[in-house]
Length: 452
Image (cartoon, rainbow, N blue to C red; front, side, top):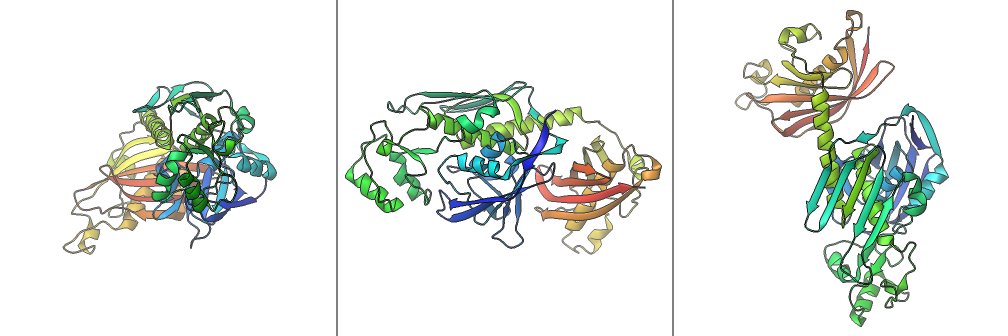
């Protein structure tokens, strides 16, 4: 049985962001079991926190960015790859700018940071993602697929029709090989791309020290002058005998392909858990990586729905489970429930609901706090389902990360989806989301105590 892992102490490193050109300090901190990987913008008021999750991916322009509301953190893939490769399940990552530093263009500096902190085994068992059916993405000459397997394996190919680079292949048979064989692989770009990328507002922090430059076009004096101005570069800029600018010495003969694998490993770790599957790809990039990860997440959600304990709880059943009564009962029906795991319920929003008399006359809108109350009641049903009468008490201790994203009006059906994230010593943490149709209208994290 594999156990979850975190790091032993807080460690920091500073560097420049590739695309923003802004200097940032990154600090890895130990985190408790089941915390996952979370990024925290310590330079902003209230230090907003963003879970490293594919649902929070907001931008894929030459890197993977996560965000929540207006807060963004760019270029998280190398840090995520490091955590996946070093088997770190829980870590709080503090950053004082909007982009993670590029450093030498690989994940090796972050691997060294983890080793400096030390790896600590925790008590909770590590959970893995497994798949039953292939997840496939194909677009043009880009292809990526995940196939069922009882362990993690990765096979990747790139071919950009450039003779000096050639077709490259790589295979990772085990994450035990990550630190030595993949973490040192540096990012790369083509000489012909540099000016276009800069015009798009990217690579402001780029340097010939932090990326391999594939010389896919002839190196002219105009190129040399432009690169010197762009990067404030005072060193040599020469045509490369090995197909790379300045004949940069490669760390591996297939270093570009290995770096693509590094990125892919990091993007897939945004699923929140390590995956057991055979990943096979050709010319893949961040968009394909995230697309396949989302396909896997969707398949997992469907599987959970199929395996759920379907309960036909009538209104009377609900009354026998929780103490709430009209006019303060906001769950009309339970569609699906897995005790201590998740629940799907609904509230039929009616013109007869008495709060509409004052909220607001002529423009009836369901108060956001009552939407959260409905989620809390659904969580209560899940917590009390199957529990003896002596324990039928739930005390809510806190609400965090509440967001209201849409208007709920009379005639709407409010779909309440609540998951139990953790449950220890009688205290549970819940994640609730409310929908009208497919539109998310409300979400919140809740903390509650169950007892007698």
